[in-house]
Image (cartoon, rainbow over all chains, first blue to last red; front, side):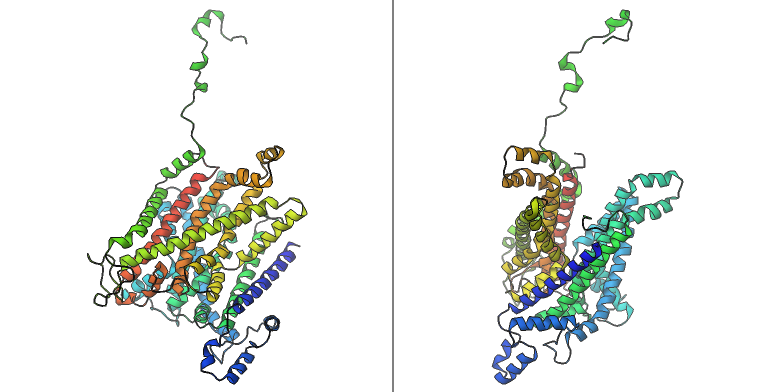
Amino acid sequence: MYIVKRLFLMLLTLWIIVTLTFIIMHAIPGDPFSNDSKTIPPAVLENMRARYNLDKPYAVQYALYLKNLLMLDLGPSIQSKTTDVNTLIARGFGPSAILGIQSLVIALVAGISLGTVAALRHNRPLDYISMFIAILGVSIPSFILAPLLIKYLAVKWHLLPVASWGTWKHTLLPSIALAVSPLAVIARFMRTSMLEVLHQDYIRMAKAKGLSGRAVTIRHGLRNALIPVVSFIGPLFASVITGTFVVEKIFAIPGIGKYFVDSIFNRDYPVILGTTIFYSVILVVTLFLIDISYRLVDPRIKLSSKGE
Amino acid sequence: MKTAFPPEQKHLFQPVSREEMPAAAIGRPSESYWRIRLHKLFKNKLAVLGLALLLIILGLAAAGPHLVPYAPSDQSLLKTNLPPSAEHWFGTDDLGRDVWARTWAGARISLLIGFSAAAIDLVLGVLIGSVAGYCAGRGRTGDRIDSALMRLIEVLYSIPYLLVIILLLVVMKPGLLTMIVALSITGWVGMARIVRGQILQLKQNEYVTAARSLGADHRRIVFKHLLPNATAIIIVNLTFSIPAAIFAESFLSFLGLGIQSPSASWGTMANDSLGVILSGQWWRLFFPGLMISLTMLSFNTLGDGLQDALDPHSKA
């Protein structure tokens, strides 16, 4: 029952997002061809407007857009005459997905280890060192860190390629730049959660029955401390997605983030609209899956709408 | 009460007068809640460091541009791309503009946007959050108001806020005001969620029932009884929403969507220097980048300290 309700809410959210983006995009005075009206003959302009359905009333345009969306067609791009938004997203998806997944994995693994170590060595040097790293990571934005990484790791010490896309080596620097701030947030989150768990009675119980330190930490401590971290993956995912905007720009990576930023400057409305909706779908679906799995993982949270 | 001692030892005991009773003595002068909490905050070295750093940055943002004889937009084509020196403390950029003056002019814009967006978030978030929290469970209309507001919050919360801001910036004219409006449109959501949760909890307290039975109206209960008790959590949330707004501003300016040249903001300066960092002009990225990072650092440590100090479960 909860899942059905949540599913309905998810679809409602998506519909609101689509409608809002449509309204925002069409609230702009003029259309993408207004600037060309002096150089292009009126008849051609008419045809071009017709090609993108810009000559029809807003309600019809909206209905057409919704209909196409249901058939998973995001429409043509205005800037490039030959590709449509679907092709653009399909082309950019690979690099963006690799970057996103790689940096999520780095952030999760390193963040959880750092946070756990800090909690186990509470108020000792290792704790302070980990939290110092974490607070630095939160404070330095990726668009400052990325140029520094390029300058030192790529240009000065020639360890990794400077930019662009190709081999696996090319993915490393951008993934690290993208991972640092979520890594730091997870580490802080994990430390708090782990400290709380370590004070629970069942940890004392596990120690009392003679389990080794590692078994206590991993089987009883880590497993319970991870639960709140799972709920944090949603916002994390969102920050990685928006992070790709700057990281793909800095490293000149042909991903969706770069296409999205380019489309903003080219005023390519179908691409802006399509990419926004694509991102929203990915994010809303991920949030939904996380929410469901979170409740399945932790039996203490009931699958009811009054869970919170 | 009968004494357990034999009567011949009774002279060993003397009755204690009330003044001498240790339990009656007050150990130290009574202190207000905020004094205790601030005392705890000031014992936290990191938080004090953050606060000091923040004050220095604020001071330099106010005085910095006046300390050098160059205006932030003064160009001098004879003095382009100079490294930091006694004449130009932070060096100059490709148009010969003084990086020190630009950094602190940028600080003003970044901090102004951060503080004003956070102030709007505060007002909107507290208002909407307390209305939703107070209306919940108050008949059918009350529940409807709460769930309508909650749906709105949930929808806004599930879209990446930077995406919303970017969309708004696409349709509005870039500039300071646009930036503040765009940041506040989604920014209040976090505050509203927290305030709502807090009000839901607080209104169960006996003092609310007491106030109501004494005839206090809804507005008085919310503003005089509920919100003052939520102050701590609101302040903590504020110390995290200011740096979030500053970060968002520099992120968007870095993408070229925010403050436009020739105005300087830390994000624009970082963006402008992207092309030249490889040719060795490190100062153009380093100084604005350092200031963004230090500002975020100081707000974060101060926020952490406040969170510890204002935590009602922790001892003073």
